[in-house]
Structure formats: C-alpha cells, structure tokens
Length: 281
Image (tube, rainbow, N blue to C red):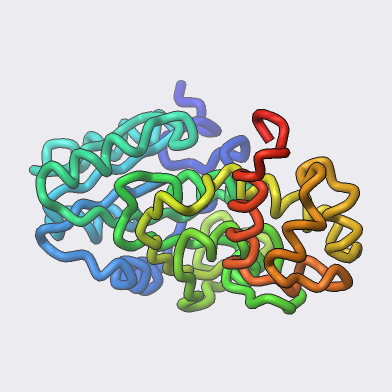
C-alpha cells in the first residue's frame, strides 16, 4: 500500500516544500538566467521539475541537486537519460558545489545557478552559492519577499542589515519581480520574489566571506548601538576597533546600518591584518 504522505511529488513539511505550479512564472524565472546553448546550469532544489523542464535541451550541461530522494528518483526517470543532464540526490549544503563549477570551466562553459530556495534554509543556500569558485556568472533565486528586500536594501533603509552587506559585498543584486503565494502548491503564508545576482570577481585583497560575516553579525546584532561603542566592546574588534574607525574615517556616533558594504569590507580587512590581533581573530 502506498504511503500517500511520502509519495513522490507530494510536499513534505519536513523539507518546507512549496512547489511552483504557475508556468508563466516558471518561464520568467528561466528567462532571468539568460541561459544559452553553451552554458552550464546548476539547479538547487528542482522539486517536481518546474524549472528543469524549461532548461532540458536548452543548455550544454544541466545539473539538478535534489535533497528529496523520491523527487530525485522521479526526475531521474523523466530526464536522466537526456544528454548533458545529471540529477544528483543529496543536500546542497553538504555537497561540494565547486566540483560542478570546475567541470563547467573545464568544458569552457559559463556556469549559471538557479534555485527556488526553501524558506527554512534561505541564508545558508544563498551564501553557499555565493561561495562557489569559480563563481557562477549569474545566480537567480526565488526567495521570501521580505528576504529579497533585505538582500537588495541600500544603506540607511529599514531592511538593510547583515544579509544585505554579505550579499552585496559578493555580488550586484537586483530584485526582478514579485511572485504571489497562489503560484505555489501548497500555498505558503507569504509572497516571494525573484532576485538576480551577478557575483563579483574574486580579489586576493578582499577578506574571506566568513570573516566579513563575523564582523557584520557583530555590528548588526548591536544595531542600536553606535559604532564607537561596538568597536570598544564587541569581542570581534579586540583592541583595534577605535583605530580602525579612525583610519576609515567612520564617525564613532554613526550606527551600522549607515555603513556601505565596501566600508564593511575595508573594516574587516584592516581587522584581519592587524598585527595586534590574537591568532585566529
């Protein structure tokens, strides 16, 4: 007797699955990738194949990574034999996604990435994709509308925070269009939005993403405090905080949400290269 709760294609609450069923939205998302015949596409969380079906046969290489083994099996039965299509069963947060970027580069393909991100793992998936090296040319994500606003927010705005800094430091961000909740089954409680990211070229002078996130979290966890107070009291700044603010011309009375991603990058770099910092700081 078939277990209907675990039948292939039925949403699983444990995986926060909401399947995109609106074909017009599916096509609009794929069009944001601007995928061409010689490209390679990495799709995270293909689900029932809403976007996969629009990509098969359109690009040279299509790799779809699906955590749900039942869905992965169904996708493999449907498209696994197609030339250039690979269905990978596994957790994208645990798989080395750089292997797919290297394979694309070895074949002379530009890598593009696309994902309908489950709401319960939005931030980890975003930064996992941004950490891929060689970096994808374009990343198109469908996320909760509130998260899209935070990703694209400008300094000084109510939505600007650690996520804004982390994403904008690594990529140019543009929110493309809103997606109503009725485009999904089951219907979620919130609306979504599609965001397009164009990762910046890696620079050896830039601090590591993990170091940047450590500093931005230290600041925005204290966002109501002035930078002078944060630099003096936050453990992440150690003894160098006030000196770094002076070197960058940062007003100690300002608050974190007024500082640009570039200032956070410079601040992180100076803290990381301070000879007075303890090892591992």
